[in-house]
Length: 180
Image 1 (cartoon, rainbow, N blue to C red):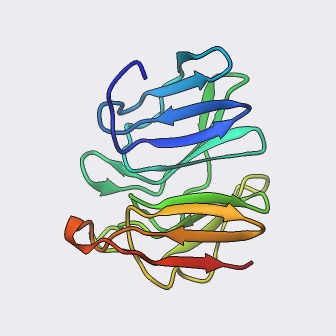
Image 2: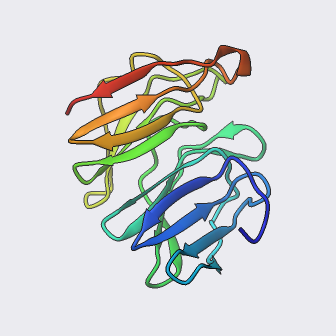
Image 3: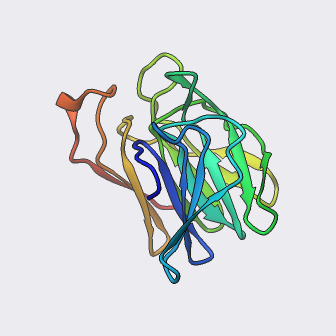
């Protein structure tokens, strides 16, 4: 990468890898083209974020939640169009949080877990429909946690690992599956 950073959000879109924000990146959006082995700067995020989630759906990149202004969790949702190199704000997430996990299931972006406004873990599970620009609350995550990972396999959403209340001493080995 052209610069050092951590706590970034990353997603693949159109065969390219997008690296968003993070410590050391703040508002930066980097695009990596593996075929050309080349990095490029793209339009900066409207807001400096770290610990956000990123996902691609419908030919667009979405950046969801995260922390701004230090450690304030946000409910922001930004949509990036690589064809025009422009961002726009979309419907806000019902539960503001950072250190969440996101994944795309059946065309909707699911956001799970994270740290909410009281600096406590949330079990919030909400799905964003990009076509309707609308959020829906779903069955909560059984084990509220932050810094978790997510994967979608064969029509199921998996929430894996994480930690409790941001404590490195309270890491988890949990793997929970959501079946729509």
